[in-house]
Amino acid sequence: MKKTLQTPIQIGPYQLPNRIFMAPLTRMRAPQNIPTDLMVTYYGQRASAGLIISEASPISMQGVGYPATPGIYNDEQVVGWKKITEVVHAKKGHIFLQLWHVGRISHPDFHAGALPVAPSAIAPKGDAVTPTGMQPFVTPRALETNEIQGIVEDYRQAAKNALDAGFDGVEIHSANGYLLDEFLRDGTNKRTDSYGGSFENRARILLEVTEAVVALWGAERVGIRLSPSGTFNDMTDSDPETFFVYLLGQLNRFALAYLHVVDALDGDIRHGANVINLESLRKAYDGTLIVCGGYDQARAEEVIAQGKADIVAFGQLYIANPDLVERFNLNAPLNVPDVATFYGGTEKGYTDYPVLLD
Image (cartoon, rainbow, N blue to C red; front, side, top):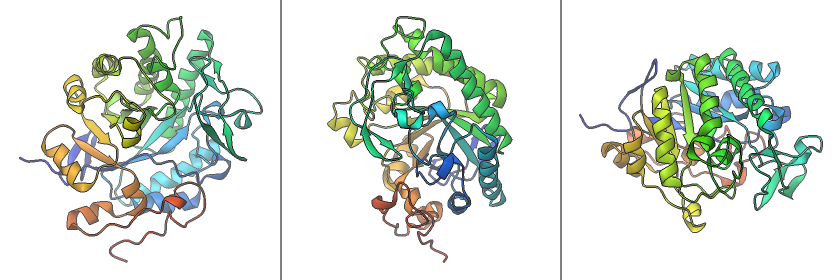
């Protein structure tokens, strides 16, 4: 039978009604890093997605790198997120929390003057988004070997908090130039200890985090996000295809809920990305594969029909179209995203997009 975006799919214990997933979308509308009632409305509006993957949620204060991002490291945050999971479940939806540590993509203003941490003391090009505006990135502090198990424990505790908050699962954010991705790539990882150098060593922290989170949740409720071709946040690697094919082979042993791959975007290509063919990743990975990266309905239907991926996650289209599933089903016109209101602000450009049945 030909599969389409509207074909149901089993993810772990969950029978999901469609393959139109909501991608994780940082919106910076959580003052004091605590989820708000406005966020309850926002996620509730989008509960018809096959699965909502929440905006990235810092696992610790050290993991914060953007203003007003909702964390998962204290009790108030758990309470705030629980209101969100409850409304999504009341509308028969499902939602995973994305676990996030930004690594070097931060600034001392978030950490009482302390340096951000990273695998190696290499500053990214560009500017940090701080509470007082854009500021140049600083050179991060390289983590000591004996600190890394503390990072793994932060992921484990955050995963426990997500369980307490009522999520259906978690996604480990190992993409887009943040901490775990920084360990994976040899452009940002120059370590000479057991977490740097060889493929095995560079993959070590992600596999340790995965083991810790799977021990709590069960592999069938844990996903991982990767961006093998990505250059965002000044990321490079000398041989990404060989490395990521190796990494996917290592991840196969977990039988995860899914692997979520960010395709090369136009910006990556302009910045000289080593673009990895999706077919290579599909061949290397045994489980359910989600792709994302600027897909429209036609391209998404094509990639599923061809078997190159099982699911497509949509970002900007979900910002502007809370009822994206229904619009795709009816081939209805789509609202146009208002880029100026993507980050920060109030309900404008957040919860006020019209739906078809209004």
